[in-house]
Each structure stands twice: as C-alpha cells, then as structure tokens.
Image (cartoon, rainbow, N blue to C red):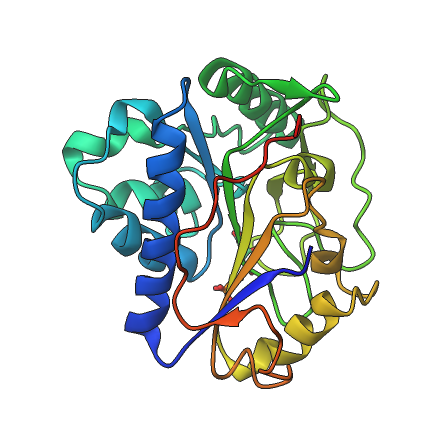
Length: 262
Ligand SMILES: O=C(O)[C@H](O)[C@@H](O)[C@H](O)[C@H](O)COP(=O)(O)O
C-alpha cells in the first residue's frame, strides 16, 4: 500500500492535518476496548503533537497512554528530557497520561530494562510475534535519516533487555549521547505509523524513505500492516513529485485501519 502523504502550506495547517488524523484514529480506537498506546518522539514534535491532541474535544483520556519512542538518558530536570517536555506541555490534570521512562543516568541498560517493564505494565500489550502493538506511533527524522534514536550505521542495536522491545546507545551523533529507543522491530509492529517532517533540510531524507534508500535508518520503517502516513510541509515535500496519487492536503476519515488479523 502506498503511504498517505499530507503536505501543509504552513505550521498551523500541519498541526491541523495531524489533529484530523489523530481525531479520526482515536475515535475509531475508542470504540474498541483496551488501552490506546501512542508513541511520540522528541525534538520539534512535542509542541506539534501536544497542540494537535489537546485540541480534540471530549477525549476519554483514561483510555490513552502516551509513551516516548525514544528518550535521552537524562534526569527529567534536564531540558533535553523528552518526557519532561511533554509533561510541561500537558495540563496538570493529564500528566498521568504520559508513561514515564525511569532514568538511571549512570546505568543506561537499567533505564532500557525499566522502560521495557513500563511498556509491559502500562501498554498491557496485545503481543504479535512477541512484540507489543502500539496503536499510533509518531516519528521524526534527522537530516542524516535517523528516526527515533536509530542512527546511520547503528540500525542493529545490541539486545540489552529481556524482550528486545527497547534498546540503547551511548554514542548518539545527536546530543545528548546516551539514549534509549524503541527498536525498529517494535516500531514496525505498530498499527499506525506516521512521520512528521518539516523543512527543506529533510527533503532528501523524505525522498530516500519513499524510495527505500537503505542509507537512511528511517527507510527501515516499514510497518508490517503497511500503514504509513507522512505529515510534511512544502519544504520537506520539495523533492517528491506532488502528483503522487496519495498526496492529500487534509486527511479525510478513512475506513477503519486493518488489524493484523485481517
Ligand atoms: O529525541 C529525539 O531526538 C527524537 O526523537 C529524534 O528522533 C527526533 O525526532 C529527530 O531528531 C527530529 O528532530 P527535529 O524534529 O527536532 O528535527
């Protein structure tokens, strides 16, 4: 299935595109049972994602849990902390929606293992191939083609946790160096995966992902149920032919996403 691509004219439209998609997916998922697990990335995403989801009225937040796709192994008092940034942007009454990454600054393996335990505890994962199934994952990319904290030449991170849902590195080219991350296998088992990518500086990476250019780790993101969405702006979309038949400006409600069983 070709990826869905939404190209916004400006930041407000990008946020609106993400909001429309989120509202449609969450309304469908809230009709099902169980916890809705959403994975979010760091960098520029917290502001975009938070503004989009907080503008959706009447969400049953008790059913929603937000997880870090990757996290820097720094205390939450550190401005580099992704979870702290989301917690800062969320209203007090919704803070518990954000599932913590327990940080052990002196023991990266322990952080990875503790985070995986939280995934098991909060996500109550329906397992598929012994991997949890996030309902929605939002990924960013770097100009080098990294996604989450999976960097060029480091696509295969060492198995350091019981289930290998989470891994870690201590030499990230993007500071800070010490990070935990969902593995590519976990990312690819999510039911709905989307990239939020802005700016001309990432246009070549967007082209690379769409052409499965192996030099970019983000090209290894190929959800097993084939559901991939791109939220771009004019800059990041500048290298793709906009006559792609899946290029839309605003997501329209789609049929319910196929589950793995279908
Ligand atoms: O914690 C992180 O650093 C991220 O999860 C990382 O993967 C980020 O999404 C990209 O580097 C894009 O960051 P920008 O959107 O800020 O360019």
